[in-house]
Image (tube, rainbow, N blue to C red; front, side):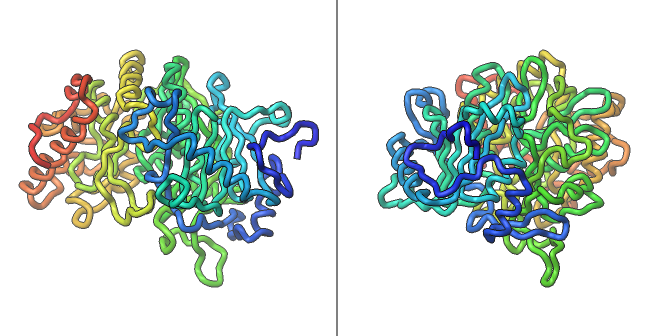
Length: 529
C-alpha cells in the first residue's frame, strides 16, 4: 500500500487490508493461497470464472443522463438511471466492509496523447492479475502521482436483488460516464472489465477524431502495419500473432492522424484446441504470469488439456504483450497499408478473400457479419449467424455511422487496401462443409501483405459485387470461388441470395439518412428473409 498518498476509494468502503499495485508474483501467490487458482505445469495460473464463462451483453447498462442521453445510440445500448447505479454502488460498498481489497492502477492507450488512467478495485487477486496482464503498467514514478480518470469496482460475489435494485438479474456491468465509474457484480468473467474500458474509449475517442476499433494489428519489418477486424473467435489473435511481423495488439486499437495504437498492454486469447504447431507464439506465452481461464487438466496431471471444452468452448489465457517475442513496445505504428475484415461465415457462402472498394468497405464494416462462435457469450452453443455493427456492436455506445464515416475518411486519405476474409466454412454450411484451414488463411493474408495480390486476376462476384481472385499461391483454387466447393450448385445460389438479402435487410436500420452506404452492398433485391 502506498503510505504517502491516500487511495481514492469510493465513499463508504472500509477494507480490512488493501493490496495496492502488487506485482504478478505476489498476486499469483495470493491467488493460490486463497484458493482462487492453481499452477499448471507450464507455470501459468489456472482459475475458473464461475457461473459466467463469457460476457453477458444483456446485463450491460449505461447510465442515461445529461452527458449520454443525446449521444449514445440507445437502440443497442441498455439504459439505466443514476439512481440505480448509486444504489448498487452503496450496497456494494457496504458488502466490502472488513474485506481484503486489491487496488490496481493501470493505463489504457499506448499513445500518451490519448492515455486513460484506470483504477480497478476488486476482491480477487486473479482479477488484479488479469488487469496487470491486460493493460499498460505505469512506472513507479507514474504510480506515485496516479489520479484515475475512470474507476472499476468489480465484486464477483456481490449479487443484485432484482426485486429491489432495478435490474432484472443478479449480475450486471454498469457504465456511468458522468461519474467515470464502472460497476461489475455477480460475474467473475474478467473480460467484462476490459470490454467496459473499451466501451468508454469508444465513447470518448471518436469525438476527438480518433477511430476506435475492435481489431488486432501487426507491423512488418518494412514498417507497414495491418489491421484485422473481427468478433471473438474469427481469428484476430491467431492471425495477428505472425512470427514474421511485430505484434501491436490482438483486440482493441485507435487510429489517429499519426497512426495506430493499442488500447491495451496484453492479450486475451482463446485457447480451445490450441496447438504449438499452429499457434506457437500464443502457446509459448502460457508461462508464469499468464492466467488460464476455465481450462482443465487430465486426471493426475497439471498439464493443460486445450482440447477439453467441458467447462466452456471459450477457454482463455491472458498474458502481457511482452510474452510474445516479436511484440512492439510501445505498441504504436504508422498508418495501415492493409485492412482485413474477418468473418466466420457459418453458411459457407463467402469466399476466403474478397477485395472491397471504399463503399463496400464501409458497408461491410457497418454490417459486421459473422457467426457468433460457441462459448464467447452465454447461451451460444453452436455458431449463430449475426450482424454486429463495426465488428463490435456490444461495445459501441455511438451510432455505427459515426465510426463508419471516420473509417471511410481514413481509407480515402491513406489509400488503404481492404479485404473481406472468411475464416468460416467451405463446401457447405456448418454441419455439412468444413472450416477453412488456418494455414490457408495465413497464406491468403501473407499474399496480401507481400503485395502478391496486385498481379493476380480478379473476378466480380455476381451476388455481392466484390472482387474475388482467380488463384493464389499456396491456396487450393477451388475454394477461392465457394460455389465450386458445393456439391449442389443450386443450393449454393439459394443460400448466397439468402445471405445477400439478409445483409440488405440488416442495413435498413442504419441507412436512414445515410443511403449512400447501400452503394457498397449486394446487388440483389430485398425480399423476405
